[in-house]
Length: 138
Image (cartoon, rainbow, N blue to C red; front, top):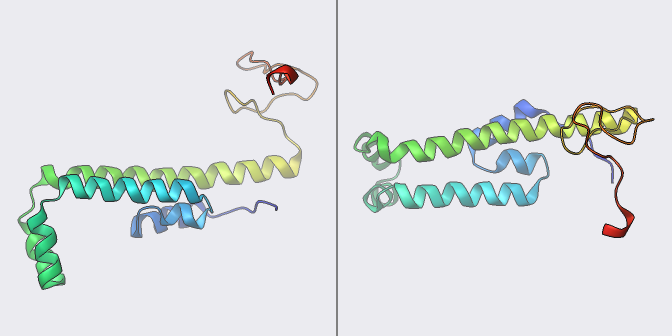
């Protein structure tokens, strides 16, 4: 299975529409499930049940009225989680594209700092971490 380049901005747009949707586009199933669950848990903990009942009974107009009565302290955690989800989806797309490009070029990156390393060295010239894996540890 080969990895393909993805559009990070599209992943961020999907994450803006629905938490975890950007990670679904990137085919990061576990991360998508965790972001969806985290957003749901945050909404469950910080949004009062009266708001949920108003939305269920009145639909869109109930949502608008309930949103007007919602304090900013109650909606701030949900907005923060949504923003973190959007940023993570974008950054995951960028990392995916970097990994695809490195695989195509045959480039090696340090597992600790993420910078490109010379092929003839057995350590990272940037952070001095060893690049060799210990055969006895596996």
